[in-house]
Length: 502
Image 1 (cartoon, rainbow, N blue to C red):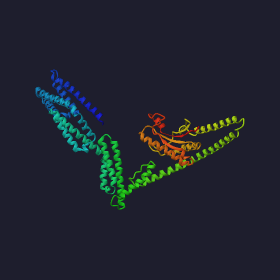
Image 2: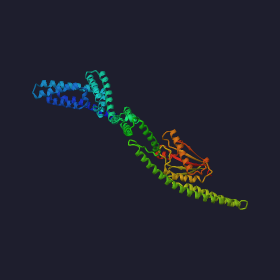
Image 3: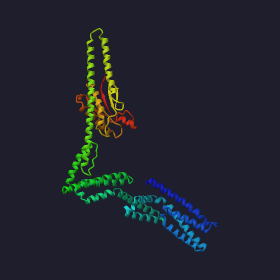
Image 4: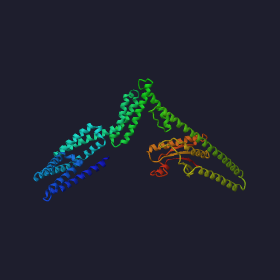
């Protein structure tokens, strides 16, 4: 229950109390009229007393309520014993006076005790009576002292005691929450110590202790953050199991100290490096076997994908190479024909015709380039005499610069196009959206652009390395709004810019 909800509930209960005051004086009125009967007055007092006792704020004036009960009981007994009406009415008047005093004390105590009563209820919710009974008992003692001071009219003392009680209730609540959230981890650590894990795996055990302490600190900062703290506890329990596994193996090999753990952790570190490349998080609480098997499976699957992609790319490149050779032959023939016609009277007309044919070939070349990509894969633009290949479907892991295998095909198409412009300067540009921070985005754009450059050079060594380079622009050159998901997706891109194509 949140503090806002609890405050609303407290206001509601105090609002009921105000209604109760009105009810008391309304129901008690017949007692003071000549028309009303003693029975009516007794029933009115009884209804008020029962309603007040059912309200939790009744604990703010226990002496007055006890006094009211005493005189009401005596008046009711007098009625059953047919005592004089004057005696019954006298006791009933005393009961009503005590109830009036109780209501007045409770109304006075409302602003003083509101927060401590909420803290007391929070303790009940956290089961502090089970997990922190000693602190809870001290809190109750301070609360009772505050109530006694309130009934005695000692308001300053009541306020002081309320503050002390409030702090104790909150302390009891926090301790109870910690026990319920981190208790399993503490118990597991204690048991692991009994099983000598601190001797054989002190580093791993310390890690478990640190994570449990982190969970406690999370709760101390925000006792409602149980989900976040529970995650730390789960990590701590994993490290305990990890330490127990290492301990068991160390005992099997007859180790007498933590040397086996250091060897074990060092080996895990090497496995972690391989797993990081594969985006895999190994778990070692049952040893190295399962992680190594899983890494082997992932390597095998990745290798199969790479071989398949390589075969497909080789076929695409071969087809493009044949087309380029044929185009170069056609272009050479056209140029030879144009040169042979020079010097003659009709050479100018023939030359113009050949130039138009060459221009047509160039146009056909650009049309092939435009049609080489599907709309969802890339966009081909001609800007300021530069040919731009905007690769919108190039895939990277989030925040990483490793090219995913499914992007190799589109890069194969890029390589084929670059072979048609062997003497042109080429720049591989990396761009990001505006999320993640300027420095981070700048570095990421540079790394991704460099990764594409390295892939192109590694798969096609014939490309002139002196005329191709990479550059990152970070978030500085958006082509769409970063306020929408689609806009951010469009801004995360690689652009291959071929300079001065016309």
